Structure formats: C-alpha cells, structure tokens
Length: 128
Image (cartoon, rainbow, N blue to C red; front, side, top):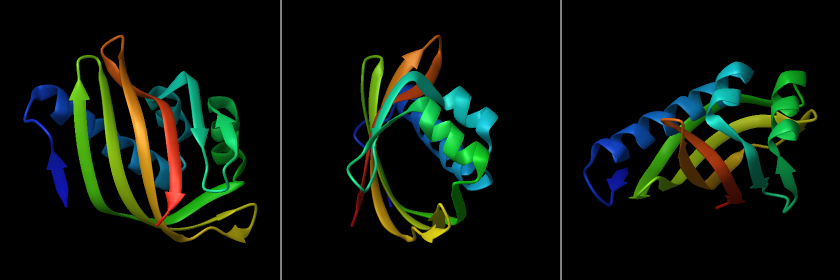
C-alpha cells in the first residue's frame, strides 16, 4: 500500500529515494547507502540503541548486518518544504552478527533535501 499526503514532484522524488535506500539495504550497497544517508544521521534501532551513519555503514560493509529478503508492505510519505517523512513497513529476513533479525519492521525516516538530493537524517525502527 502506498499513500501520499500530496501529489507533487517532491513526494515522487522521496518515494524514489526511499525505494533506492531499500534496494541498497538489500544489496549491501555501501556506496549507495553513503549517498542516501546524511553524514549527521542518527537512527534508533529495534533494540532502542542509537547509531550514527558511520556505525550503520560499517555494519553493512563488514557483513555484521545482512539482509536476505526485504518486502515493502506499506509506504506513506509526507513532504513539508525541504523535509519529508516516510513511514514504511518492511518484512525483512536477515541477521545481525549472525543472529536472526527477521521480522516485520516499521521504519520512520526523516529526509532532508541536501544539495538537491533527498537524504535520511533521522530514523526509528520498531518491530510491528
């Protein structure tokens, strides 16, 4: 299910960026993740821990975090000026440090338009 609070080129661009991020997560594409994650990123993981961009990228780079399957079940987008929020439910099959980390997760991501590119500056991930 995809829901947009408004039809606009900006909302379309955010949807494209969100799906590019999901593809990069699945592929472990650190270069694309670097492009889409703002240097000031802070994210709250499903365990409640806050991680920064460097820690997140290293987990992908080193294979600590591996995603084997990722299916989008829901996507909502809200754009206000140069800021956007995506509300996404993903069914993920993967591991963190070799331990199963599979499940249905809700990602809330705050995006900022940075030099013409939408980049994630904050995220919160919770099991649903």
